[in-house]
Amino acid sequence: GESVGLHLPTLSVQEGDNSIINCAYSNSASDYFIWYKQESGKGPQFIIDIRSNMDKRQGQRVTVLLNKTVKHLSLQIAATQPGDSAVYFCAEAYGNNRLAFGKGNQVVVIP
Amino acid sequence: ETGVTQTPRHLVMGMTNKKSLKCEQHLGHNAMYWYKQSAKKPLELMFVYNFKEQTENNSVPSRFSPECPNSSHLFLHLHTLQPEDSALYLCASSQEGSGSNEQFFGPGTRLTVL
Image (tube, rainbow over all chains, first blue to last red; front, side, top):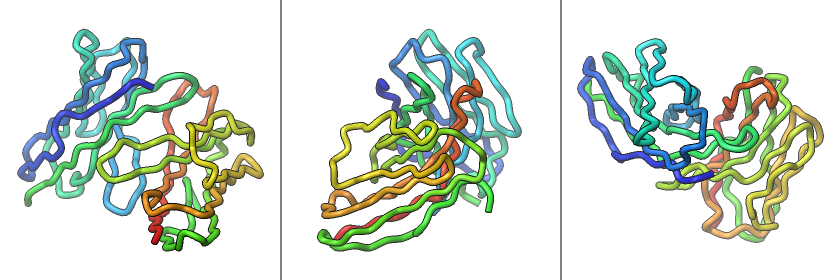
C-alpha cells in the first residue's frame, strides 16, 4: 500500500475539550478508511470507518471526516475523557482486505 | 475467551533461542495476520493467511516462520533472531468476503531479543 501518515506526533488536550487528529493519505484509489485506537499494553481497537462515497460519518462522541480532494482524513473526539488517552492510527484499505497504517498520533488528556 | 488472544504477552530470548508465538481467534474469521510494531514506525504487515493458506509474505526474513494449522490458530516460530527484531508482534483476524476490511487485533506479544 502507499504511504499513510499523521501530521502531529502528540496532542495534549484538556479533559472536556474536543480533539482533532489528522491523517494524510496518498492512494487516491483507496475507497475505505479506518481509525484505530491503541491503549498502552493493548492491541489496536476499531473506532470508526468511512467509505470514499461519504465525507462524514458519526459515531458515539467521534466523527470522521474525509476530504478526497486533498486526500485528508480526520478524527474528531467530542468532550475528551481520560480514557481517550491513547495512540490513534488511521488505516487505508488496499488490495484484498489489506490495511496500510499511519505512524500513529499520541493523544494525552489532561485532567 | 473472546476476540483474539495471544500468548505469551511478553518474551525475552537470546539470539540462539527458538521460541513460538501463538495466536487464537474466537470470531469465526477466515483470515489471520501477523504484524510487527516497532517504535515510531507504522504497523508492518508480515504474513497473511486466508483459509489456512499463506497468501502474503512481505519479504520477511526466514528466521520468522509462520504456521496456520487451522483457521482459528496462527503461530510465529522464531529462531536466531537479531536485537532489531525486538518489537510488539500483533496478530489480527478478519472475515474476507464480508464487505468489511475491519481487522480485529490481539493484545500483542512484547518480544525482546538480547
